[in-house]
Image (cartoon, rainbow, N blue to C red; front, side):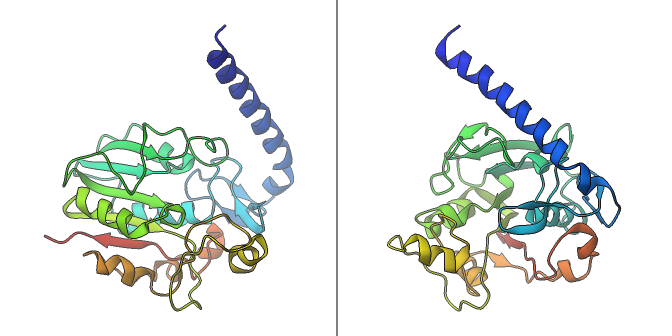
Length: 255
């Protein structure tokens, strides 16, 4: 067996073992009906912890709070899963969201990511290895682009926003979601931050950007029309394990 094939086989076995361990750990959380994942319809006493957050992770479909909110937004606000036919590019393709698109006759679906080494927990291997700040498609190719937790990791997020705008069709939209501190007036990037400083800003994540209240305005500067999102306050957010302050940014390319 070639070394690469052996690696793939061993990795697949490791992933199965990890999933078995996850399902065993999830048993106490499954004994109840206080919360529900809208993606896989599974009920729990509470969602499992994820990193520093309690009541966050669905062990059945691997969704987090942002995925559940994105799914509800796509399904109920945007009619994403319904006619007409649409061409979609999904960056950092989330396992749970990708599964909802499979076999949908109204969606021509393509995935992309510049990083393929963390595809075991909540994301899948992409169709294309490609960065959002250098999209290898012609202008006005896609009806919809999904980028959840992507801009925050890009060195030049302005370039990434421009690339998304470029490849969107007129009348199309992008779905953005990134961690945002609304108490911070201006977004910034600083590669010189220490581990301790990062911990104080956003729990030590090794991210490129620390977004503040100007997030939507940064998108508007690049030509997008951005909606003000209050949908999380209109749904049963406690039932779905979603913060009422959660926001999805729908950025439209107007014709």
